[in-house]
Image 1: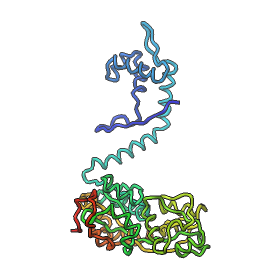
Image 2 (image 1 turned 180 degrees about the vertical axis):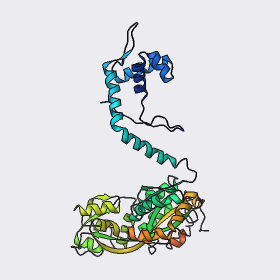
Image 3 (image 1 turned 120 degrees about the vertical axis):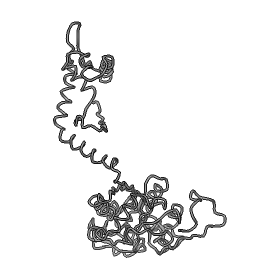
Image 4 (image 1 turned 45 degrees about the vertical axis):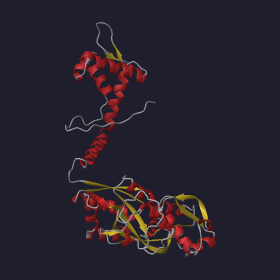
Length: 381
């Protein structure tokens, strides 16, 4: 079976709203005009080009397309006629879908030609607050031209994407009170630099243990998880929650090897909750909203801030300013509480890394090697 690839064109004129294929146009012109020369004139091309295209397509499709004899009109072969018929049938059947697709593409590309529109790319791990933000921005962001392009990514991958210029903003989460030597702090430190990165307040949420409804294993801590032999569904590498889990384990004198780990790791809170609901594990670390969405029980362990982060140099870019304005709106913050079940935390405010993460050690080691951020300022300004 031959494969079909779709293409589209950007033009100032209205033109034909259907899907066009040059071979089908050429076959239709031959059928109308009775000759290749008439078809070429009809389509505004040279006879040589029309002839060459027909021969090329005959080779591509391994079937003759045109029949003609000396002194006779050119006509389509049976295969050529069936090909043209099939294309017309498809066009007629798919006309509504084609028009809907064309209109959607026009609406989407309109953003690129609108000088007042601002697209902000954001890489972030799963959180219901981000879903709520995207929906709110779709309804109200038109007022300041904001369009959010949110891509799912593990926290460390999101920060790497930010530093490599693949997005304008990333998200990170951390409790304020953790040890500077904790696994979470150690994972974040190589990717963030005071003075180079700025935090934008977003929400506060609760992380804890997702368990079966009613908590039949009576789990209240990771120590209980280790003691009970409950199947623990872990998180994929690069996940901030993975490092947060390791931080909690260290506090209780445990490591991941003390847990009965499930065979698979999940990439998000929602996926971990789904795994528990499907009976693939007994407990996992996650956020409360993900547990409630699957009808699971939840054991709260720690409040943490879920922040947005961008480079200091991007703070006054139109897209970032538009997002900060949106986050500071009272109606957004009220909607966040009712729709996502979490609290705004200095929403839209620009915060220094040092203020948000007081556990950060700003004093460089005497023999430290220069990093990729060697030009970053030593302290926030």
